[in-house]
Amino acid sequence: MSDIGCVSDLSIHFDKIPIYAAGVMMVTSQVWIFCLLIYPLRRMETQIKAPITGPSGKLSKQFRRANILATISMAICTFSDTFTLILVSSVVPISMPLCFPLTVYDFTLMVNIFSLMLSLEDFRKTVL
Image (cartoon, rainbow, N blue to C red; front, side):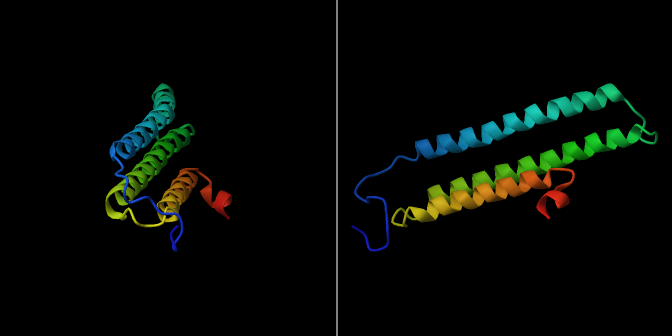
């Protein structure tokens, strides 16, 4: 029993392949979800073919803004997940309590949720 909480058994060697496989699946699933979101927006934008200065030009600007916000949100989510994977698998010593890596993953989840909220057009109303 440890005085600092639940820790990994140091006598057992853990293979890093499952951690890296989970990281690849995390990033790949985010890219797929991003593509499933962006494709309909791009398709609708090209079907409208509206001039930027007309009354329907506002709709074209909204599509462009939605694409940019979704791209930024996906980049933030991918970066935070990759950073967390590197941090937990390489930097955090194995003798740390298990609550620390789990807290890091929870922090990453919070960053992902916040970046998704920022991708909404009226995120100020949502947050405030």
